[in-house]
Image (tube, rainbow, N blue to C red; front, side, top):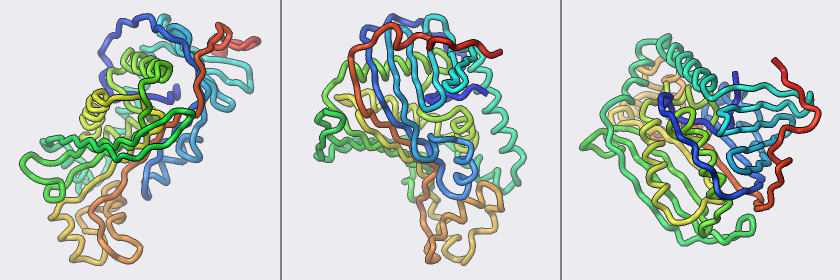
Length: 329
């Protein structure tokens, strides 16, 4: 299946009219995406460098075309053609996928994840389906006052937190989810903004809404945690209100157990029997710390994105198909 470094939550029917971008930019950036806990140990094995030491990518944007290279692999995105060229830098070959084909691949990944959820034990499935309750979302923005220089830019720290809980209840009472993004914002940087806007245009052209991750990873997350999608949308909306350009950001998605679940867990030396041995069981086991203490909040996944360098000088060959590459059917 086509592998994408930046993928969206699912809104596949949206058709985007792609405008011409105004600035050229060349960057080097580093991204990570890691699932936590026992479940994460399994899923992260299939994530490559992104879920291990982090993926360093060199990217160049010129007009509606972007070339990215990471180690032995590369990618050309052409918004005008609505095509993605996957490059094998070692074998000097490439494969072509249309935006429509990428939408279909994500649909299949999401359907496969949904099928796995349906095969879960009834008690585990109930725990997952509990996340589909009617939630309300709260946003909190905190300017910490911390400052530091990153990639040659003076930045300030802003922490954006989105909390999901049942209507009329606090998250500690009903249980729910907390998504926290710690950002280091520089004064508006045209080049970085252009990079972000290009990626959003690409993402929206295929799926509709944005989130950083991998197709299989995001599909699994949406299937297992239905609340994740609206939280990511809320996070993106609030992020758009902030003044400045993110040079470094890290996101944590946490699950919070309800007061009732905590009370039951504390009364037992082992995870509650209602959780079973599947995904729910794994998460429940994480509630019991190394010293036997019960924890209410546990991490589902973490991700990060960092701009290492930036240049406004981009030549036509910086976004062209490398010489000598042949299409591989």
